[in-house]
Amino acid sequence: MTYANPAAYDRFMGRWSARLAPLFIRFAGVRHSQRILDVGCGTGVLSRALLSAASAIDVVGVDPVASYVSFAEKCAGGPRVQWQVAAAEALPFPDESFDAALSLLVLQDVADRQRATREMARVTHRGGTVAACQWDFQDGLPMLSLFWQAAEAVAPEAVVGHRTDHPPSPGRRAGIAELAELWSGCGLGNVQVATLDLSMEFGSFADFWLPFLGGATPTSRLAVTIDRETRGALAQQLAGMIADVQSDGSFVLPARAWAVAGTAAH
Image 1 (cartoon, rainbow, N blue to C red):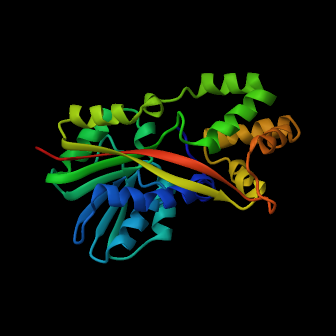
Image 2: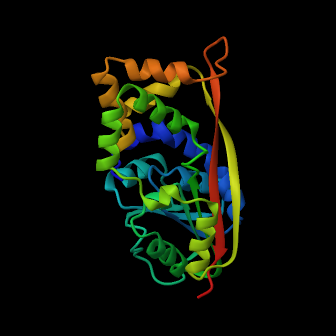
């Protein structure tokens, strides 16, 4: 999946990644004085949360998109964090270089998830933690499912064309059981899974909708195109579908993510 404009992505999805990151860190059992690899660091949300979790943690963040690595580096610098352009499927580190390897909201878009998981395990010390987390794209992210329902209502042909050009990766259809099977199949031990729930609070419909128009992802670029071509009908349709809006215009949507962790066996 093609991502662009890291600042726009941070406004669109990064703010929710930041809410999810502490829950994921607790699930992964991160401890003090660890050296941790953040695989697919994106704008650096997980790395920043790790640095805040304990003063003795050191982090290396890697991502295949240079503009995102540059953005992350501008957001967090110092002696405890390093940044590098690299893909999850080919991590440029020796075996057993880290105490843990974590990946937040990335694995669903990796072309070869098995290779990436094995790479995370390879660079992790024996007995160290390898963990990942991804949204439940099927039923756990109304923020996006409402958008797709609205888009299908006002521009069904555009949605069909988009899905033909951008078919969802198999990882986006994976559930929590598939993640556990992936971890076990890649030789990781003591595999555990968890459901991580949070609330997405929006101060207004504009707070919900305007980040879609940043064009940071294929989905948000489609939102821009459809809303322009329908002269605002997409936004109007979507606004009418949101339930339980308060008198001040605010509303809350639930969100759910799957998490999996295991230990490197070597």
